[in-house]
Every structure is written in C-alpha cells, then in structure tokens.
Length: 412
Image (cartoon, rainbow, N blue to C red; front, side, top):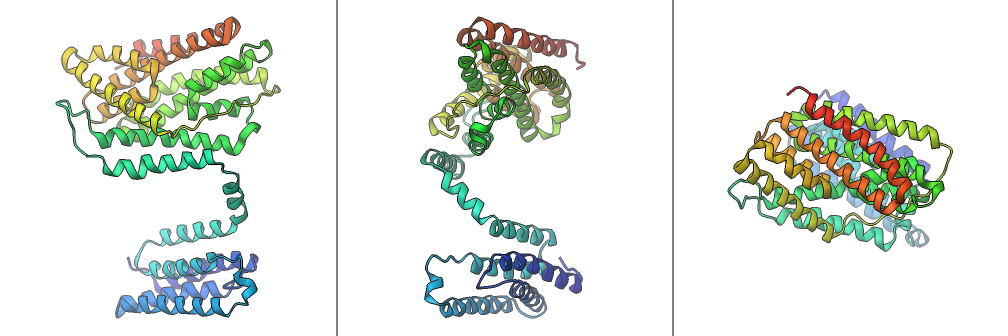
C-alpha cells in the first residue's frame, strides 16, 4: 500500500524515538535515543528507494546495519562482553525491518511491532523474574501444550472416518487445543496469584481450570463448619465461570449463531451472578486459601478429552440419524455429567454446520449444563457432608429450575 512519504518518515521517526527512549533509559551502550530513530529512518528510506529502483537496496541497507553492529560489538571493552546480551542488537535489526515495512505494508502492524519490542525491552526484569519462578512442573505444562498444539495437531489427517462426517482427527484435536489452552491460561493466572487468591478469585480461576475439580477440592474443605458457606460460594462461582467459558467456546466454534445461544444462556448466567453476589456480600470479609491446582496440559488428559469429544460427536450424529432430534437430549444429559466442554463443542459444531437448528442447540447445551450442576451437587453431598451438600443443593436447585423454565418457555 502507498502512503504519503512525509507520513511514512514522521511515523518512522516516532517509532524509532519510542524504542530509543527505552534503550536510553536502560543506559544501552549500543544504541539509544538518537541511533534508533536513525535506524528506522534508514529502513524507511531504503524501502522508498527499493520501491522506486531495486529491491536489493533493502538488502544492502540490512548488511550495512549488521556490519555496524559487528564493528560496535568488537570495539567494546572486554569487561562489557561478559554477561552482556544481544537484545539491543536484535532490536536494531527489527526496527530497521519495521522502518522498511512501513513503505510496503500496513502502518498499524508497524506500530504494533514497535509496541511489542518496547514492552519486551522495558519489562526485562519482570520477565526474567517470572521465568526464574517457573518450576519444572510449570515448564513441563508449557512443553506439553507445545506438544499438543504445535507437534501433534499439524500432523493429524484432515479427513473424516465415519459416514456421519463427525470423526475428523484434526478437528477433534483442535478442540483439545482450545480447551487445554483455556485451562492452561487459568492455571498460569493461578500460579501468578498463588495463595493470595481469595475466595472470589479462587472461584474464577477454578472455573477457568476445571469447575468439577474445584467442586471436589472445596467440598473437602467444606467438611469444617467455618468454611462451609465459603466453599459453597466458590463452588457456585466456579460454575458461573464455567458457563462463561461455555459461551466463549460457542462464540469460537459457532460464531454465526452466538446470539441465539447468548440470550437464554445469559439469563441462566444472570441468575448465577445474583446468587454469587448475595453470597459474596455475606462473606466478603472472610478469607480462604486456594487449594493447589494440577497441570491441565497433561497429554493423558488431552487424549481422554479427545476420545470423549469424538465419542460424543459420533453419538450425537448417530442418535440424530437413527432416532431424531429429541433423542439428543439423552446424549446431553449423560455427557453433561462427565464433561460440559465436549458436549458444548460438539453441539456448537453441529449448529454451525446446520445439522441441527440453533434453537435446539442452545437447549442441548443448557440440558448438559444443568446435568453438570446435578453431578457437582452430588459431589458436594458425598464429599462435603450434609451441611455443604444441603447448601449447594438448594443453590443449584434454584439454577436448575431457572434453566428448565428457559428450556420450556423460551420461544423457538
């Protein structure tokens, strides 16, 4: 795209000044407040010349900048070599390339790249500190997610293996990557907050990681009389966040039907929020620590979810073909007891592919969500004891009644 030359030059100068300001404040010996804008201007001028004459001018400029960096590096005193990095040198090369890119590409991308470079340079200490705090367990979680998303996913075949078109290995594993990514985000937020997470934040993070696991953890804590009401609050909060998570999954898998899903599910979520708000104001001054969370990116768990999602997708297609749409409710009830994500993704995909109507799709998701509440209430009763079980059963009972009313009364 062609832009006004003066605009390109002034923007190039401004972006270079931004990075140079950061490097000057960090007392960089390689480049600072004057050098970086000169580098980006050089990139832009080389880009303008390349556009008019020959693309080799860009390469010549890059070689010249690289040669200057090499000369500067070897002119340093030996004491500055030891323990020094090449971060500023790499930033110089990126900003030269950014200055050249402004001539040929989107200005917004150049601005975003410059912003990222500036932030990475500025938050060096915090980033290094965060890496230092990562233990073997957390690093293993990252590497396992890399294995799941960047190694396994690309090599899986993109074709179906059944007559209903429901068993596609790559599509199934893509859903695994989505769910593991959401759970891993919650896990690392928990690692950042740690034991400072109070009951409210504990419920939010628990819903992101696994609302069922959170229900089990806090049901064990709920055996003590003093923490029973707090445990109920966290369990309901985690369930509310899991519904938000469900709506986010639907928006990604079935974006063209999100409004049809959003309104009835949003009303059920509003009912949850009301209960959460009442419980919060009752216990806002009380404190509790969040139990230790497990790594959600384990390969075994990913494979189990893939098998479960594939099974539910196949069963949904088979049941619809053999018994009709009404029989899908039975699949939702059973699958909702074990995993809400799998039935949500399967139903959303069927809706997006127009295999079922969106009005049926959200009802199936709602049935699965209510079935999941029944299952978690059972966990609270069995593990948490009579008092916690009674509290959770009453709260979830109200939510189940609200959900059933929506299923039967909401217009098709």
